[in-house]
Length: 372
Ligand code: GN1
Ligand code: MG
Image (cartoon, rainbow, N blue to C red; front, side, top):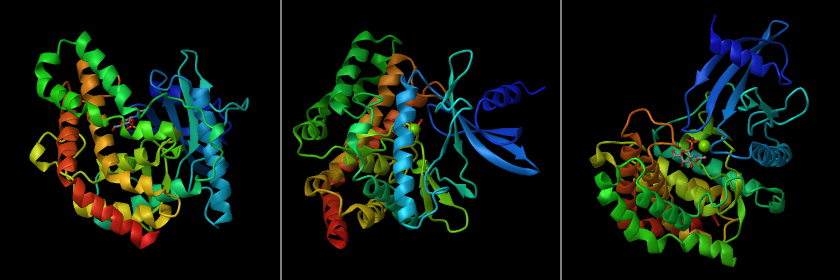
């Protein structure tokens, strides 16, 4: 007997999905949640659903998280329908439990939820062509555009200060002080880079709190593999992984997309000579993004887009380093030095973005002119 299958079956039986569960598979994606698909057979017709175990060490309030997801996807569905789009494919659909709840807590307190499975689609882990990244820019630009009139007061801040880079530096300094895993002495160059960059880390958060930057519905995890592509058209169809949807800044989403997608190396690349910011990829992303979002963005946001790429790359590198110093308690790792390799790749990229910031500003200004 496949124990995992029995478990997946018993969890799924609490949800309002049609038919009998006849199969499942593991989807290996992301550093935080565990993801499966389940196959349901109903009168000879099979249909897949996405089953996820929400990591409640990271997402401490899954009910609020699910409330954000449902509000945002409902809002998107209305817009998609008005635009003549396909509401079943262009955003996610939450399937509630049989008692009408947004998620299910099992006997061990683990939290589960079910989404539709976007069939005939796939994700990329690396960019294969500049045109592809244009399409990702369109997807996230569209996400921002469609949600630009969302009633912000309906959203919970499920992870407070998620992209408050300056607060993260303070937490980082505490971890260095505590040195719980005894690793601080191995990473002095990386620590020095964090401390030397400290002065820049408040720029976005300060402008958000002063009102110089607008608060927006923010995805907060705009990695390339959070965009589903249609297998036939090869066009982006759906933005997924809505767990960190919260009030925030458009800059977080732009910067994070560049951090992941415009790196010529992998997020965890060991060979740092392969890591750099690809200017052509940056150009295509910013053009795709502007083609959908230029009319919604403020001039201040546009001006700060290149800096956001540095900020999100720096912040992510610091988070990986912080976790390495803490003994790998937050991000899933595949080998002992994984978080350190991730940190080094991110810092290499952050330094390259610093060198190229003037060029990136020119590219951004041109793309804005093209589409505003
Ligand atoms: C985590 O698990 P995943 O890949 O969706 C993290 C993001 C990081 C990302 C780095 C809730 O996202 O913030 O940018 O890893 N999510 C959370 O790859 O911390
Ligand atoms: Mg995520």
